[in-house]
Length: 322
Ligand SMILES: O=C(O)CCC(=O)C(=O)O
Ligand SMILES: [Fe+2]
Image 1 (cartoon, rainbow, N blue to C red):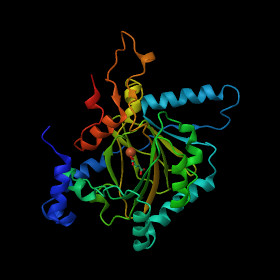
Image 2: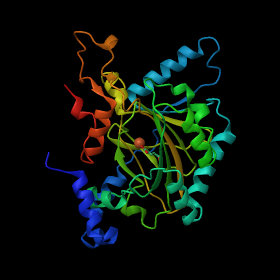
Image 3: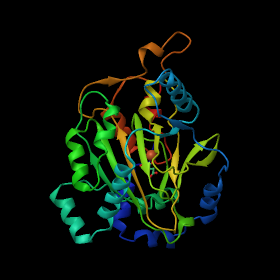
Image 4: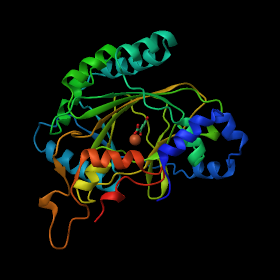
């Protein structure tokens, strides 16, 4: 592979020509328009109702639905999950407030709290793949432990403002919150909110607002993930595809940019442990003679390292295939 992402990023930064420089150099609008339009109306990612999960055989039913959705779609939405609507609404409002506050105050918070603002990659992505990431994100990494405890999510997402989010960090385990803010885009046909990718995580739980824009690749077509008030979007990430030995699917998704208004979403990535020597790989119970392991064992930090340095159109999975 002769492509060096860091080097290209630096070259772009050094040029100081900005997005305008890239556009002046020529963007193939037809290519992007074709890619944007490959959509499938009428399909919908599975919606799983968690109500009464403790009653009778409901749990079994739900497990079955989760399994089927994870195999066929890699995506589903959950409703009646028990997190109060007010908590979800306040979380969206908190993120909006954070991003829309006075720029100087925001800057002071970033500095004071040493919050890492992920590189705003729009310029770079436009350059590299003719598709920008039209969003500002705030990334908050949680403390790590050596196992995943996804059932803690409801507590740790009780975040209304940045202060609350930080409190959540205190009790968080091996996960990262990405609080997205997709500003209104003057030319949505020229760009993307988030370019096509699969997630570098075991599992992602996503809260999105009512604007829509998230699309998932299904049978070679883009399908809209319809916003459901009070719903949460769950998707399988690369790491779960690996440990399930390809039984569950980590599928590509993207977010369209729009000129209607800012879009807000909060993604909680369950990433496992970064700094410990724990090895992950296809779960032994799934391995038989007919179903041999498809991936080698790996450390989460190896995987994340590969993901970060890969070319944009590459999958993070390929490096671990046997
Ligand atoms: O904002 C969204 O709806 C999805 C964002 C996403 O896919 C990601 O951050 O990995
Ligand atoms: Fe994603």
